[in-house]
Each structure stands twice: as structure tokens, then as C-alpha cells.
Length: 501
Image (cartoon, rainbow, N blue to C red; front, side):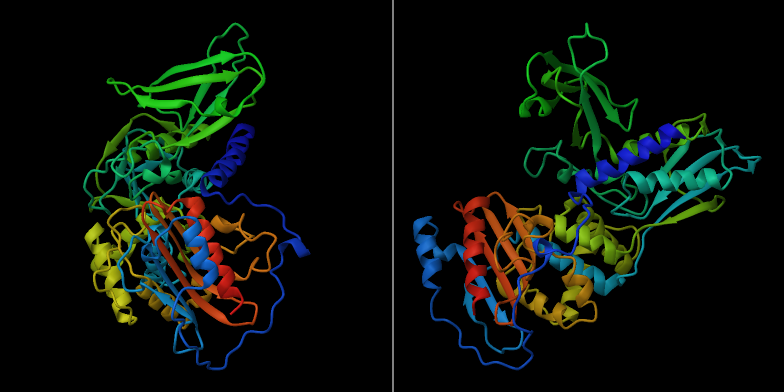
């Protein structure tokens, strides 16, 4: 069990790397508190919309050669009938990852914050004295957060219930989804990146394979060691990472990956003998194979025996349920989705919404229809709105600034507002905004969702400004000048202006 515990500890680290939410002990000191401000106002105010953009913003746009027509901006005090600022708010634009706000709010309304996903183990054949004389069937229902330690726990619970040996195969039942084949390279040609992984009813660790690269123990070796997790008989590595002498450099942890015509993974680069182990998280295998490989590793690590291999199939009427495992709740999971902009989790969530509303199997069309239907019922205008896969990792998604503001205004007055708002990043404190406004009075004063693609930047959410006014803010920037750095400067200028109103 010593090795099992060590593996689990590393599993927690792996999950933290992927989710980008490593737990750090935080004391209640001045560095981790929001800036002081006046109490929240609840009186109705009568704002008069500005006739033009703020002068400071106009100057910044001119300096960066950004056409104002490429921007959509909406700022409104939630106690006012009129916006403080609106600019091009009815133009349909790419929202990038701010569309996750639409998907997660629809999920809260459809499923409720206490919704949990089931992962089941069924047996086909009798179990006698811990020996399953037949097949074990694993059936997922789209849990977005079946990460290392949770899958480890699921397998351990099978062992704890007395199962010791499987004489047949492990069958993975993917019937909860009905999806077309997924092309990992289709979006941006970066198919190895985990954010490009497709959805799967039983998805292990966001579909990430961990590659550990380290100096070999054999001093005569000329290549670095490359160790994948989970280990897989379906993955063959052509190791071309040459050992070099000298100090460890950043590029030593960044080898180039490619597939050979024979579907071998070619890993090419250099690695210094003075480097400590480095880790890459990459999308390398079929989701079904990936889930099986992890199961087999955890199972055999426990001392469990498996005589067969992997097969695809479905639970049938004669099979018996052996164990059911519940995920963290939706309320917990949307914090990971929105704070850290997890695309894979959001794809899973969209499909869950569709299956819940229209029945299994889940399809993309069911998910899209369920989201738009939910928004319409809440009074949000969905005309020409396109959510596509729900994550924003899409060139097809379209939402106007007015539509996004309507969603935020509806959500603010909803019973699930606390769960929704707390899922967003706090500037200077956590999530995708952890490094912005760290030494500014805005620190911790907003709940915002960011979005970035090539030629797209966006931000949307809520601000409690210096005067204690609660504002809805939406900024969309589409165009060739919409880079991450330039878009961030424009967003920051608009946020600074809004903070003083």
C-alpha cells in the first residue's frame, strides 16, 4: 500500500496541475482581502447613458490602433433602469469562454446545485468468494470531474466491497452519449493539448496522459526516461529525447510531440542530466482506452486480478449493479469550470443538460436546445445566439453583449445567484484573474469570467465598485487587434472606469 499511497499523492498533484487550482494555505491578512469600499447601495438610481466612450478609453484605443467598432461594451448598475455605458451591444460576436456563464447558469436552472453524476460498476456473471466469473461493466454518465484521486477511490470501493478477481473482460459502456467522431486537431491543430479533448461518458482525468521526463538511473544511457501515466499497451513511444550536460533549461521540459505513420508517439528534444523530473499533461489516447488503462493500473496496484482485456458494450437486462459512485455536486464543479475555464468539463456539462431535459443518449443538439430553452424561460433574448459546444472553444459561438448582460441580470436575482457568482474569478485572488489587479483597489471587488481566442477577448460578470454600486459588466473585443495582451489592457481600462462611477 506504500506505493498506492504515493501514487495517490501524485494524483492529487496531477489534478491540481491540470485544473490550475493548487491548494495554498491562505491566512486572513491584508494581502488576501478585497479593497475597502462603501456599503452596497440598494436604492434605485437614474443613470443617464454616456453619449460616447470614456476619453481615457478612446485614447487607449487610438494608441493601440483598435477600431471602436470592434468593441461591444455594456455597464449597468443593477439598481438602475438605464446603463451607464452601452456600445455596439446588439452585434453578435464570438464570446470565447465567457459563454461558459451561459452553460453553467442553464445547468443550475435545469439540474440544481446539488446535482451529482453517477459512475456505475455492473457485473455479468456470478461473484463467488470475491471472484467475478464473467465481465465487469463500467458505465459513466458524463462526470466532468472523474480525476485521478476520485477514480482511484472508485476502484478501491470495488475492492472494499469484496471484489478481488475478474475472470472476464472490462466492458466500458458509452451508451449515455451519442456523438460523432471527435477530431482533436479540428479546432486549432493542437490535438495534443488537453483542452481539445472530446467528451466521453467515462472520462478519466480530463483525458490527460501524464508524461514524466527524467534523467535515467543508467549513467551510460543517452536518452532521457519517458514514463506515461496511465501505462498503456496501446501507446508506443519513440523516445528521441537526448540527454545533454549542463544546467537545466526551460526548453528541456518542452519536447516536440508528433505521431508517426505507424501511430507511434514521437517525443523529440533534449533533457539535461541536471534537470529534476518534469511533467507534461497531453491528450494522447482514446477516452475508452484511457479509462481502461487507469482502471487496470489501479486495480492491479491493489492486488486485484484481471484475466481479460478491454471491450466495448452495454449494460443489458441480465446484468446486476455492483456499485454506484457519486461525483462532487454541480455547485462545486462550476467553480472549477468558471474560475479556471475548463473546456473539457463544460463540454460534459452541456451534454448532461441535454440528456436531463430530453432523455439519453445525450447529443450536442439536445444540449444546445436545452440551454437556449432554459434561457428563454428566464426572459433572456436568444435570437441568433449560438452556444455550439458550450465551452467557447469554438469559432461558431455567437452572443451579443446585451444578451450576456440579460443573463447576468437574471442570474443576479435568481435563487442560485450565490452559487453562480461565486464560481467566477476574483481579480488578484484566484482563477484566470489571479495575476490582475493584485496591487489595486479593485482586488477582490469583482466576480468575472474571462475569454480568449485568437482575435477574440472578452470579460463578463459583476463588480462592486468604489461607491458600493453593484454593476453588470460585459466587454467583447473581436478583430485582428484582439490579442490577449492588448485585449487585457482595454478590459482593465473599462474596469477602472466602471470602478469609479
